[in-house]
Image (cartoon, rainbow, N blue to C red; front, side, top):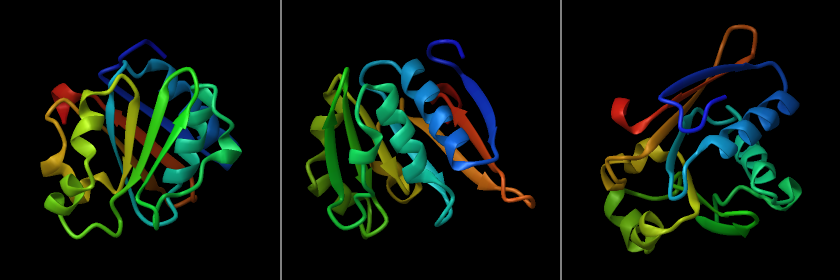
Length: 148
């Protein structure tokens, strides 16, 4: 994968493949990237984030879904800010969490259920959409900011 891709699509047939895709993804995102992670419940969003953590030198087993805590930060070769907007009512409540400081950070911020708070995200954010096909494979598509 090339650094800072404009559009990339992967197919994952297993959790280990999703982890590997996350690792590749983390290595190509630029400093300060904001990623809206979108997909249905059980699509593998947290698994992908664990793979991204591995790609940043963070123990993937340390990464947990922030559904109830809303925000976790992990330290590796870069900071990984892992947020979850599932329980957030709207974009205003998301901003009230203090996330704007993340948008100026050199770390990578990944927001699960990012579609719920898209209006609060900077216009130059990435989108990663995960869809489950009829064979239960994951179609993972990265869309760079120019196409969001």
